[in-house]
Image 1 (spheres, rainbow, N blue to C red):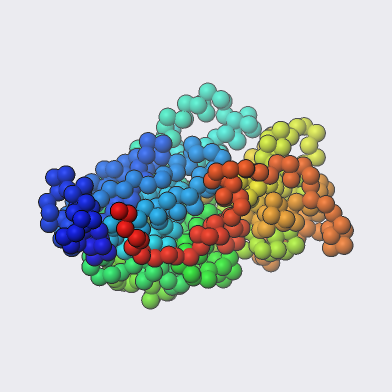
Image 2: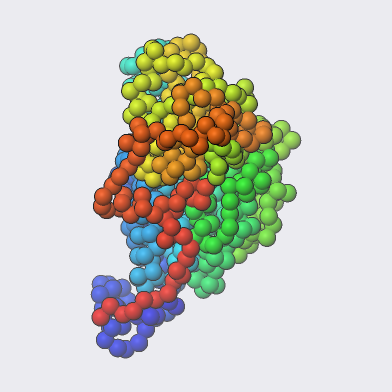
Length: 568
Ligand code: FES
Ligand code: MG
């Protein structure tokens, strides 16, 4: 055991390590039994994960039962709705802190408890870089709340209802009345937002006990899975099965197919690229388009569709979706159990063909994320056609440019803003360096005068991200970002922009010669983040662009689980 480096032997240091850990624990705990950390992101300030301490208890029971020693390790937790300026600014910090604490301690394996958007990505990045045997328990979605008999999808319906208020079709009072109905139970957002997506992708990657992801947070079966996962973690240590053995190119292939079939969040692109970077796997944006863009969309979930996560679970869950696309999966990819992911699909079944469509009757023939390139996004930009309006997927319009989200809010409802249904809204300064942290502001609300005219979507382009619960014809993750010298900083009001999703291009229709002579917008530059100390400074100095996962340059890769020098 790795932990023997702390506990084995009769010298003074082993004595110290054991003595302080005893406190009622029998001496046999230190005699070669696997020490299993439970990296717990439970926090009152991360309400989506607050139930994970109960989940941890079930994990502990399973670890004990299998002969291991469970050790709860509270780790940095990121609550998507509260943390400013954006939880994404801290994803890499959370990953770094978790990685370092796992390596610094006498740990042989780890169970990762996450839920809310950034928590599972940060835990998987950490696990990949320390490469200790690891398994995820996704905390699971909340139950569906209803308002006036109509189900509410968190995130998605907040955006929808607030647009209704601005359009004058819903009163402010009724809007506020829906507030207490939105969050019905423990668990993360119940739409196919980033949390749901990353929980399911963790299973598609092979890092979750198969059949577990998507179990609603209050469902007893989550605790059963947690207990079983605790047992499994001990087995992982005994078998020496590590993230580097499970997370291969084949498992990322399967995650990309899954992302398309479930209609998952665009944020998953950034997270999967970052996790792959920790493992030295050369995953690119092209892989997402090549592997995923022609995979059929089968799960009819909000924001693009009708149902919510507990519907997906009752309809058969992730394995039922994957069974329909099993021919597109890589059969060599293994799971934490040692068995291939595809070996779990025989038993799966669809129990509601409205929620999970059979392959022959997909919601969309091509559900994946598309990669766009062109002179406006030389290193790429992404769009989720499934969440976009079909009539805008090929569009040419004039730019209406905003230098920051504050500039946008100040002017969007100005009756004199030169905007119409054909306009292309451009927002810059929202990339990893510019904001900093690449916030979810790309799905700019529509100008009031367009809403009042009944228009519900226009083309929007931004170097930021979009909430997985949002929808619209939004071009995201434009790379390089404006603050990193990207051409987005050169766009001016009235420029023609051409979006061609089928052709995979995004073009600023300004002659190259004219563009070369343009200066970057001083208004945009004035809004870029310029931190002088602390994490923000470290982040802005070292963050990579979205096309490689927005990790910090010095965190890419792995340092393994090597035991450091003695502390005494
Ligand atoms: Fe936590 Fe949506 S706010 S998952
Ligand atoms: Mg979100």
